[in-house]
Length: 262
Image (cartoon, rainbow, N blue to C red; front, side):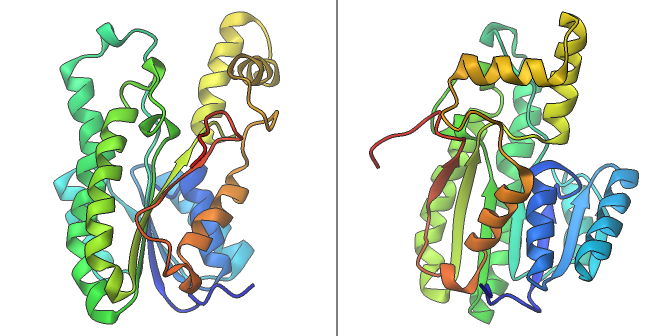
């Protein structure tokens, strides 16, 4: 299926690994001019080269911290007028005890999870409206819709982001500009591999065993963690020309752990 976005300019913040990388690659397959930002230069350059090699797309890496004002300014200098904006970030640390969350941690995750995507939307949306095409997808967390103490740092900022984006989405939909959120559960990302490998070392077991235990504990109906390339395909669909009637939605992608009738 041709998603109708070949030649469009796409910016993926946090696109060097995990769900951002999966999304960036899926967009590249569709023939976009791809810009990806991340803080770590080595991994970013490696990802950009991998996507170029696998898809033949034009890929421009931007080394910057999109949670900072300086970083956002640099990214928007390189790519000031994207037609497609996808934003994500490294997941916040798990919080087994909400009492141990510091003010500084809260502020840092507010900058990453709420302020950064809001500022990128504010900076790019008028141009999208003028061109009569825009697709914005925030890669959020299922914890924004289904709160859990373990995700105290990531859920609340992203819940606020969903509230903000739904309001803005209604104001710009008539210009063929859409804003939606994807709310992932557990996927085989670089961060997950790092965290679960560390847990495995502490327990004297393997990454696969820790993942298996997590699946059983959280009763994931799909009986597995998600795949970043599959997730990327969902993101690309939300960025497609055919997605003009999907407005202000938050889709949970978590293998069925959390669900409601609507």
